[in-house]
Each structure stands twice: as structure tokens, then as C-alpha cells.
Length: 323
Length: 273
Image (cartoon, rainbow over all chains, first blue to last red; front, side, top):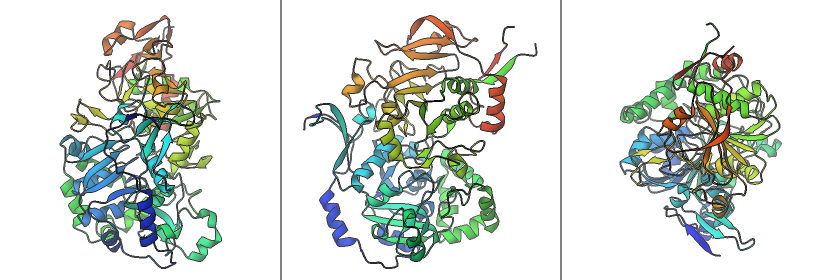
């Protein structure tokens, strides 16, 4: 196949057979309980230097409690696939956890912008869909996929994409390398103890994100029984054998919204936005992460039951978010 | 006179974009902000059943009123959707040609309709300013049949050539540039809606072309406000100003907190009687 142009962005060389080997040797097919605390899950499954990805963001259904635990444990040198994000990368970057990001989109003007401008965090340019599409290739066990966008722009130049001549039609087409994450974090509505998980609402990419990763941590609002899962198999978004840990974390996306269950904490989000803009993230991390032991501890000491009830009342639209 | 109406640049751009929206077409609208507001306004006016998707996979919802705080975060944004899919599905349907128009808000747009939302500066690795990135705009601008862009008239917003092409317009303007880059044929930017005018693009040269002026603006105002010389249509049309009804819907229902519509300078307009 004739390669017409290549982006010069840094990407990890796809390794489908390496991934298969990992699945063969590391992924249990056993129906066993994977319930554990967020502390244990992050200690066991996130290593310094890992390639990290997660679904959605700190505004909506992102795995925020798991992200906070990564910051609390001071993981280092992570390469983070940042797409359709908000201020979630700011938490990880302010915590000193990140050395490189893939850019789809982040909320600019604060921590993340500064880190890039000062050369502390390296970047490869993609787009929201391009990152998710690369995860699809990874989730299909393929080394790459062709796509109809990314070409012609400077994004192409700064990405790891290639423009080739399609051997079937003779026309130009962009190829992107598969992305297989080392570790993925996904926050679910419901999950059984084995990891069979249900996600409601517009999805973004829970399936691609979960499936392309070597290690997968599911946090969930609610633990349900395996019987319940089997009563409505169509609702299972992620089957258990992809999952390495199940962490029961009610309000696990806080301060974000879990559509149908609770709204986002506006007061907290404004505090975070201000800290991000004003380069005052150390105080924010101290208050919300370092000075508390766990997610439950944070909810108890920093949020309180009254606020949580308010957030639940705020979310008046329930249709479609319950089995 | 009592019939003077006052509105912001943002309000005008949203209303003028809403007026372009057609009932029987399909739209991919950037999530949150002015594009979504233009869509919700058109839904309340001339195009009540118009189909739209946003990049998280929400397919043609009927949001109750406005979408509070960070758009898209609550259940309201996806209320009564036809389907809740995912980002890749939106991309597939767009690649297949189902989405007629994309609507995007621009930080920077150049004479060929190329959009920058990534960096200011000439060194990608050490940018002078780092913005959020292409987001979903690259796929929208690449694969929708036509793209409608929104940007206020300002020199820094309309450079001759953007520092970085985050989302493709007609690239260098040469014939077939998009197709040679692997993008779907016969696609590209269609309109640029500003506070002073609406631009289109010349079929031959692919250069931005002034098509219609707002009643309060002149050709000279437009030329003085941007960083390149656009082509100018032989006959210039007139951009309709916002109506009282549009402004009421925007202010009381779509953006009651004024997060978006309060942005930009105020424009006073007195219709000739």
C-alpha cells in the first residue's frame, strides 16, 4: 500500500498479538467476585507509565472518584487519552500524574493549557472521534482502521495518522493506528459483582473504551445481582470477562451529573473552575483529595448528605435511565 | 422612538444561524454553546421537527426548555431523544452522508474556511497559547455535506491563514484539495455567520465571499474588521435582524442565565418604518 503522507505525532505502535497474549495470560474468564475498594483497584491495576483512558468526563458520568484515587496515590508518568473531556485532565495534571496526552478536546485556559505551554506535558493532536475510533480499532483486535476525516488539516500533521492510496479503489484514504489502553476507567449505573455492567443514556464510548483496554476498572452507582442481569441481557453494556475490578461508588462521578440519578454540583464545579484558572489547584487537591481517605470519606466530610439529596432532587428527568 | 431593539453580537449570530436551519434536513450540531442554541431556537420557530445529533450520540432529543449549566451534562439535554447512541455511530452516519449540515462556533476561521481551535504560535510542541483542540469539529467539518460556521467579526478571528488547521475548510483552496486528503467529495464550509454579515464561499476559488450585510453594517465595516480581502457578491443581500420573539425565546427559555447570549458588544437597531 502506497503511503502518501505521514503525521509526525507520537503514538504507541499497535500490537494486536501482544494484546491477545495479555488477554490469554492475564484476563480471568472465571465468574468470581471482583468487588474491591477504589484504593485496592487503583493500587493493583494502575501502574506508573500506563496509558490511561476513560469514558466521558467530570461533568457527566465520568469515573471521577477513580480519577481522584489515582491522584491520591500519586501515580506518575501516565499517558492519557483526553477526548470530550472537561476539567478531569486538570486534576490528573495538577496531581503530577501525567507526562503525555492525546488531544481530542479539553477545557482550555487553565492547568492543562499551562502545562502544555510550559512543556511539562507533551501532546499528540487527534480529535474526539479520532481517539474513540482508534479505540474501536483496538477493540476489534485490528492494527488500524481507515477513516473519512482528519486528512488535510494540521491535526493530521501532528497526529500518528497516515494518508495512503486505498488498494481497492485507488483513492486517498486516512488510516489511524489502533489504540489499546493499558487501563480504562468506566463509571456504570449498575453492575453485578462479576463486572457485568449497565450504562444508560447517550454513551459516548463505554464499549470501545472498555474493550480496547488491557485492564478495566468499573465503578458503579449500584451493585445488582447476577440474576437481575440475566433477566434483561439486552441491557448489559459490558460483559464481566472484560472487567478486572468492580468498585461500588455511589455518586462516583461527583461533582458531575449522572443523568437520571443526580445533577452536577454547580458550587463545586465553580470552585474547581476558579482553582483551574487561577493556578490554585494545590489547594483544591488538598481539600478534595489528599485530606480525605476515600470517596466515601470525601462525601461525608466535604459534601454531606444534605447536598447529595439536593443533587438527586435536581435531576427531575428519569425516563430511560432505569431498567 | 420606541421600536428600537437592542441585542448582543452573540444573540444576532445565533438568530441569523437559526434562520438558516431547514426543517427537512439533518444537522450535526456542536454540543453546547451557540450552535445548539441556534438549533433550539429554530426548533421553536420555523423548523419544529428538524433533526439534529450531537457528538455524544444523542439523536434528535426534545429538551424540555433550556439545558442548565454545562450543556449536555444533565438528563435534560437528552430528553425524549429518538435514540441514545455513541460517538462512533454519529461518525458512521456522517461518513455515510446522512448529515446535511454541521454547525460550529469558531475561535478562528480563515479565507478558505479552515478553523483553528488548537494553538496560537508556530511551534506545536511549545505553543504561545494552547486551546482545547479539534473536539468534534474536525469530523463535522470533514464529513457533513455543508458546514455553517459562527464567528464575530474581529481581526484575530479572521486571519488570512490560521496558525493551525484543527478542522478543514477548503485547505489551500486548490481544486480537489479536500478529496486528495481523503475527505468525502463535495463537502466543505457553506456559510459563515457573523455579527455584521453572512459569507459564503466562491465555487471556483473556494475563497470566502461576502453575500449579505446586516442592516447596521457596511462593506467597509466588514473589510476593516477582518484580516483578509474576501470576494464580494455582485448583489449583496440583507441579513434579517433578530425579531422580538426570537430574543424573548433566547433570553427567557434557551439561555436565561445569559451564559452565551450576553457575550459581545451590544447592537442597537431601529427598523425603518
